[in-house]
Image 1 (cartoon, rainbow, N blue to C red):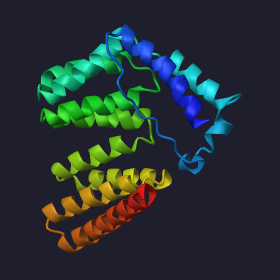
Image 2 (image 1 turned 90 degrees about the horizontal axis):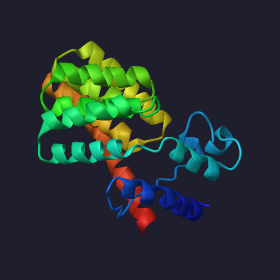
Image 3 (image 1 turned 45 degrees about the vertical axis):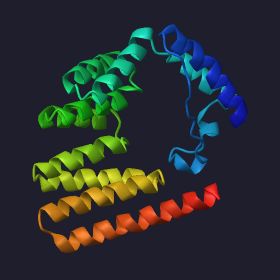
Image 4 (image 1 turned 135 degrees about the horizontal axis):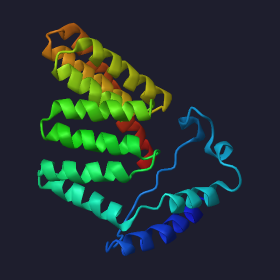
Length: 219
């Protein structure tokens, strides 16, 4: 089934990128376990053949040539560290995004503002992403980090806790480790060294376990 899905996705993506003047060289599909999704197995969420429905959804949400080009331009601008231009491109992407895609688009826009050191606007769009998707771990994590930079410990703590809870529900241990690391970094900056030590040691423990598991899978 995974091989069949890969071929079907390829058949959709190649002409989509070709229409935008882009040669599709490579892409990656990630296949998770049904338990990764707290709403239940994907096959139970989709009526009919889940592979056919997945492809139909891709086709239905197929981005326009302009949207694909804006994304490429946004990435190129970010690599050049031209964050003002990146902000403009990501704003256009957010304006064109479907309701399902808007949370991710808002996070990307927030990241551009953050890289441009416009913390107020970054927080605004991360908060918008969190409102649009209450399970956006990335939005809550970035909010926590920026609240921490402002020494707003109450909001930082709430956002860290929310991000960690989401990652735990997703069984995303790398995400949990990142939350622990960032929380520990904040504790260190405000001289709560005992608390920082606990968080950083937990992050290191998870990172080591994750690395060991990946080594076992590769081996």
